[in-house]
Image 1 (tube, one colour):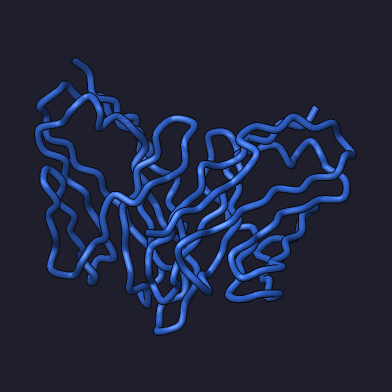
Image 2 (cartoon, chains in turn blue, green; image 1 turned 45 degrees about the vertical axis):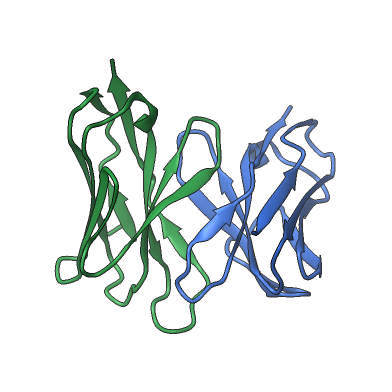
Length: 112
Length: 113
C-alpha cells in the first residue's frame, strides 16, 4: 500500500530564515504530488503541484518554491520566510484524472 | 460564486442524531466528488467518493445532484467520534485530464454525549 511521509511535524522559524520541507511517497511510482497550505480557520489552498520529475506548476504567486528532484520526493522551499508564511503545510499524492488525494501528516510552521 | 461552498456550521448534535451537510459547486464540468473529514490539527482524510447514483458506506450516505450542482452527506446514528470538520471536494478542471481538486472550507460537526 502507499504511504506518504512529511517532516518535520512542527517548525518554528524566525522571519527572514530559509525553509525546506520534504515529502516522500512510498509504494507507488509516478504519482502526482501537491503542496497545500491551510491558514488558521481557513480552507486548503493549493500552492504547487507536480505531474513528474522536474515538472512544477505554481498556483499562486508567493514567497515559496517547490522542486521534485526524484519521482517520489517533493520539496517546498523558501529563501526568506515572511510572517504571512505561517500555517499548516500539507503534502499530498494522487493519481489525477479525478482521483482522490491522500495527505501526509502535515507540518505546522510558525514564523516569529 | 465560490467554487465549492459549504455551510460552515458549527453543527452541534446529540449522539444518535442524524445530520446532513450540503455543498454546492460552480463548475458544471466537474466530474469527481468526494467528502473528506479533518480532525482538529490533523490532515484531511478521504471519507468517501460520491457517485452519480448516490452511495452508502455504513452510517454515511452521499448523494449528487448534477443538475443543481449539489452534493450532500448524511450521517445517521451520530457517534462522538464523528466530531470533525467535513470537507466537500470537487475536481477543479473537469474533463478527462485534470490534476487538481478544490476543497470547500468545511463544516464543523460536534457530537455531544
